[in-house]
Length: 115
Length: 113
Image (cartoon, each protein chain N blue to C red):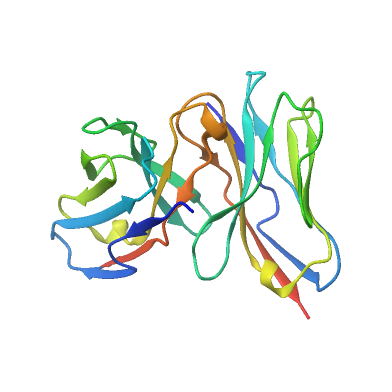
């Protein structure tokens, strides 16, 4: 079974701090994604990566950056955390585009609170 | 732009009953994929069912089935014999040939005893 893990289930940070959210998948998937989930808004794509060192902006990239130095690991970085970034962050991975209809496998999520 | 609409923010059903969650989408493409994902209160998102647009037959997975109406761009999920463990947020998602999925805003389903 595919396993996607995220470094923390709950995280509390202060405004202005630099925050790193880590995601690791163990199935050699090419694609990895970071979503933000807010009540009433569903899942919104922040960034995705289709290969090592490659990244593409999603729908809401402002205030975030990403890093993918190894195929299995995809990091989301909040350069200077703000209170409006308090949210649930979900990581996902999938096989190369076109295979299995882009089914994505999700991690358990990180609940980030910025005070 | 792709859009996915789930018109029912919340639904409730009694155990053993059948419930249908609705989803509509917008696309100009002829080949694409549709998904229903389930997110239980523990928050791990899992795939419930997948439908390929070029397949006429509606997908089925045990108690879960879809009603795919391509011309109407409708993709509803039917849950038969509802169980307490079906309580979750359900998301409809859509993908053309690219990398990303486009999600609806979700339907919160509560199964009551």
